[in-house]
Amino acid sequence: MAGRTADSPHGTVDKRALRFAIGFPLALAVAFFAAGLTLLSDVPRGVVLPVGGNPLALPVYLAVAAVAIAVVGAGISTQAARTVLPRLLRRVLLGVGMSVQLFLAALFGATLTAQAGTDAAPGRRLDAIVLAMGSGAAVALGVVLAMTFKPDEQWTRADDEALTLALDPQLAADKVGYWVHPRSSVVIMILLAGVLPAVFLSLITPWLGVASVVAALVALGALTALVEADRVGVRVQLAGVVPVMNAACVDIDGAVSLNVSAGHHGGWGLRHHSGSASFLAASGAAVVVRRTDGTSLVIGAPELDTADTLEALLNRRAGKRP
View 1 (cartoon, rainbow, N blue to C red):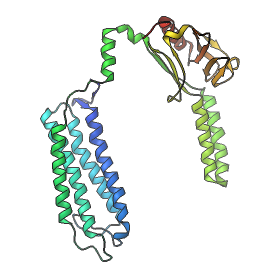
View 2: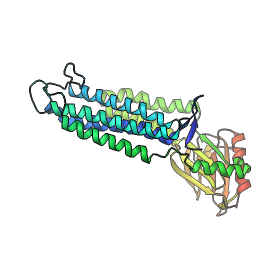
View 3: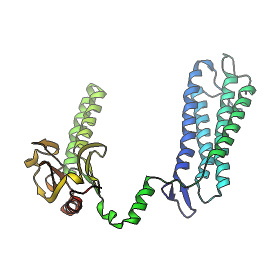
View 4: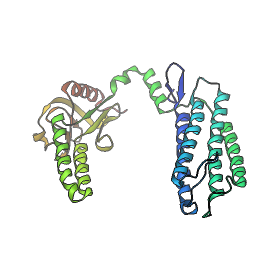
């Protein structure tokens, strides 16, 4: 199912449980580090670790604590993502992982609290009250998580797509996706145009150098797009993120693949002219999509074979609802 993925000879991994098992300890470690920095002025002589030793500067102490919380917590909790283990054991492992990482946060917090607020060398090593309260909360939350965690396969959108494909094998042929980007020589030219001036502009101010490089990357992104087509329609997303062109299959009258000149359609990148639109990263293979309202879309392709595949899909689905 979508919640699992192959993971070496040892079995499979529950992706959702794995994300939580890694993400929560990291978030807890970062939060502990950030909160501890607020006590920087209260421990001028440093902090002694719970196991003893010489006083450490507060940022170093917090870094040690954060690493311990993240590594130990994730090390235990990630075992709960192994689907080859019994369901009850997976629950216990996730609960134990939660309790251990919260206990470590309470332990390092109790140590910091006991040694804060004095200009003298660290005295008491632990604040028993803070440690007791934190430990109680750690055990309680661990039990709650172990009871609520359901290590079952989850039905997701990917499973819906897999079922649809199994019921209709032709659906696999009704999906096309590819990237459109400039030729390598153009990419190098754009990067050089941004990097070389940045070297000299940075002598004036570093921000101008950064701005020059960013402008080059933006220009490169403006010439790169992700093209996707399926039974719903065809879509073009600038840099794979920003949707700039879209045509539903029901609104398509037909399509044709051919070699075009970018100059005949306004130039490279996204262009709008006379109610029509085009996206071309270079002259060459493209698909011209005719819509029922009389307008058209010109969509670039890396090669003519890819353009032919997109043309066949759009003509097969032209005028049809998904």
